[in-house]
Every structure is written in structure tokens, then in C-alpha cells.
Image (tube, rainbow, N blue to C red; front, top):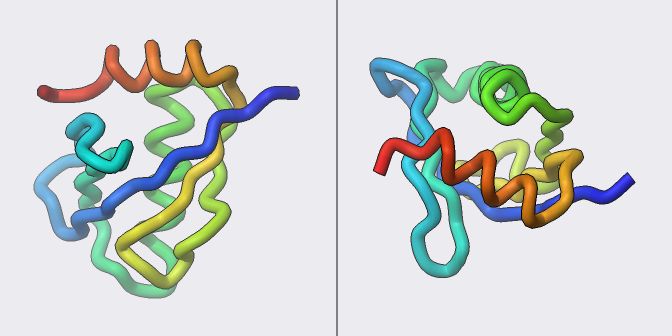
Length: 89
């Protein structure tokens, strides 16, 4: 199965979960509601992105960091199309 991997900058304590689009260097900005305590942010990212992208999502690097590497179970083209569809900008 193909997958697409990208970097993400996480902003915790937001009012709502929001994907803000790609910024240089090909980094997705994601605002999350949870506080960065005991992996709650990571669970929210995986749960909410999976729902929005309708695919498997896994954090593969940056478990304890705001800068994460995320893997999506989609081809690059499909992943980029779905990400573009859910971004707020």
C-alpha cells in the first residue's frame, strides 16, 4: 500500500481542530484543541486527520515535539487533493 509522508507544525490549545495548509518547506500547520499532556495532542491529530482525510494516519516522528512527521495511507496525489480540500486558507 502506498503512503504519503509530510511534516507538520502543531499549535496546541486552539479553539477548534484546524488544518491551515502548506507553508515552506512543505509543512502543514495544524491547530489542535488538546493541551500537550500525555500524548493527547498526538491522539487528536491521528483521530481528526483520519476522519477528515478518510484514511489511516500515523505520527512517525516527533512524538514529543511540535514538529511532527506524519504518514497518510494514500498516494501523494490523493493525499494532496484531500489536504487541499480541508485546509482553511
